[in-house]
Structure formats: structure tokens, C-alpha cells
Length: 250
Image (cartoon, one colour):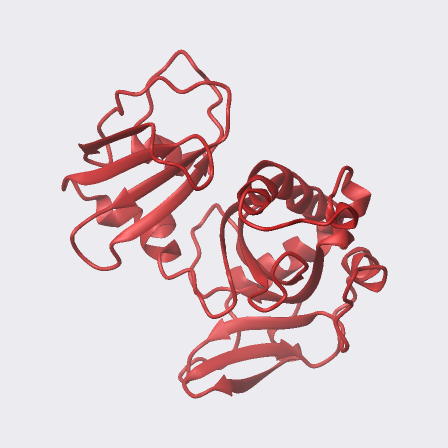
């Protein structure tokens, strides 16, 4: 994918993006949209984050866009899995979900999600691919939904108007490799009190015995940005994990 096939534009004041000159063919994701509860009117937008001084997307950003194109079916599977494990349990306890909004198989993902845009962030690491999908979201049409992906795993989500302000600091900078004391909270259910909370540095082993379950890890520190969250599926229940271990497993 050549960098000269993109044009630069300012979407809001001081928010610059590239977009393809020609519509990118995303047949599988578009098929999800066509039969969705609320298909976008103008197809899936491509938004590559940049700034005023930059004249073309980076090589890593083009690699990320190609990654999305080549992995559309697996991305839909990731959306479905994240919905079942995180989104549905979270919203099911806070809103009335109609029967025709309940997903029971991957092919029904379009009952809740239609993809408005694919966003490629400016930050990257040498090994990993990061991208954002922005959705029309049936459970909260006013605020919609965005998923942050690392490769084929959804690692964070936010509503319309929010931003992943923590992603570069957490996933690329590793909280700047700090040995400062962080408050680590472990949640085993949405909208519930933590089952564990204590102070650790990023490299210290957390004295909590994880079970075979989905956990939310909350992180708090004194300097800005202060709050972060991770979704954690422990792979080995016999060992203790540090926060750094958990970040690497995302």
C-alpha cells in the first residue's frame, strides 16, 4: 500500500488525518455493515492519525492498515469474543437489553455493531500492530463505541467523545519503565468492588491468585495520565504475574 495514495485533511481544529484517495475494499467488514441494525451511509471511513508537519503516513501505519484488510474475518471474531466476555456482561447489568439485541453466535455481531471508521494511531511498537474501530453501537446509540486493538486482541474500549489517552503511555512507554508505587485493583465482575487492591511497581509480582476468568485490572498513579485499565485472561494459573507481565500478554 503506497503512501502517495492518501490525502491529508483537518477533521477538527488541529486534528489531522490521512485518508485513501480511493475507497479501500473491505468486503467482509462491509458485508457485516450491509446487514447490520444501522448501516453507515457512506461506507467505512479510513482515518490515519497525523499532525500538521507530517506529509505522509508512516510505514508502520500502512502496515497496520494492510493488517486490517488481510484479517477482516478474524477481526469480526475478536469483536464477537470481546462482546461476549466484556461488553454484554457490563451492559446487561445496567440497561434493559431487548431479546433481538442479544448475540449468541459470531454471525449475529451485526445486531449490535456496525463499523463507522477504522482509525490508525500515530504510536506504534516494532513488533505490534495497533488500530481502532469506531462503531455505531446498538446498546448506546447516543455515545457509540470504539475498540482499541493490539494485533487481533481488543485491549480497551471507550464511548464517543472519549479517547484512548493512556494507550501510548501504557503499551509503548510501559509507564516509562517506572519503579514508582502504583495502585493495582483487580475486578472479577463489571460494576463491582475490586476483589484485590494493593500498591506495586510495574515489575513486582502481584500477590493475587488468578482463576480461569476474565479480569479487569485498574491502575492508578499520581502523575498524568493517572488512570489505566487492562482486560486480563490469565494463561497460567500456577504463577504470579507482575503488571509488566500482564501488559506483555495483551
